[in-house]
Length: 230
Image (cartoon, rainbow, N blue to C red; front, side, top):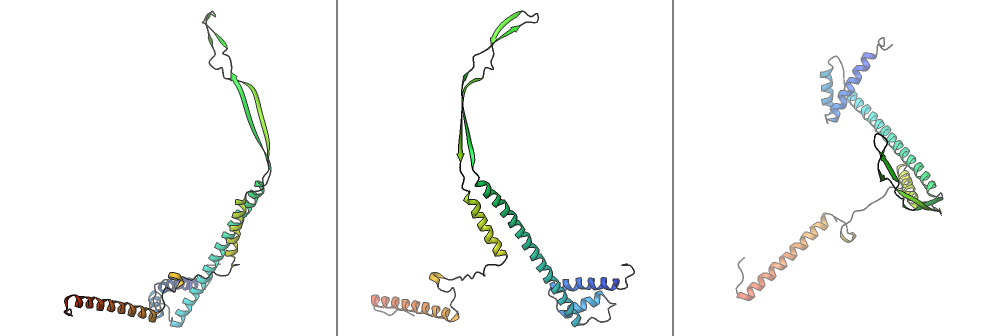
């Protein structure tokens, strides 16, 4: 069916043109330059106005916004699914941490077993010698077993993680208002009060330097009796 489509060639040319327009637009070329480059690439095109260039660019921008929106929605959905899986695991772990169990301890006492004599015979069956068995081991004399009921009230660490994951889930879904943060200078003062305040600070520093210089000159005059050279 595709081979018999009379519009197939025109569609392919349009897609090729849009790819070229997208590349030129990303590089910052003007509509006029884009038009000239497209006409050079496709000399068979009779007319390609600036209005058509704008139409192509608008179409590309709309498609890009849709793609970004779809990608964002997919990323959000995947993150929510991960959080839900973690929540399921945490709730199961929480339930297990509340179950009571029994702690069993075992204490075993014993003494070294006596050596057992082992007879060694030669090839003819005659008794050659008699030695003690080296693998004597320990002989168990008593076993003491203690069973204690362990009552559990749940591990609070699981609840803390469940609470934090709930916060992250609500943030992703936009249930919280946007946070407003203000950056200030020392003691809460603005970092920059504007040009007028900046000039006032410069003038204050200049006056302070002038007073310092005048005081220094006066001290020099008082000590020598002569006015210092300017």
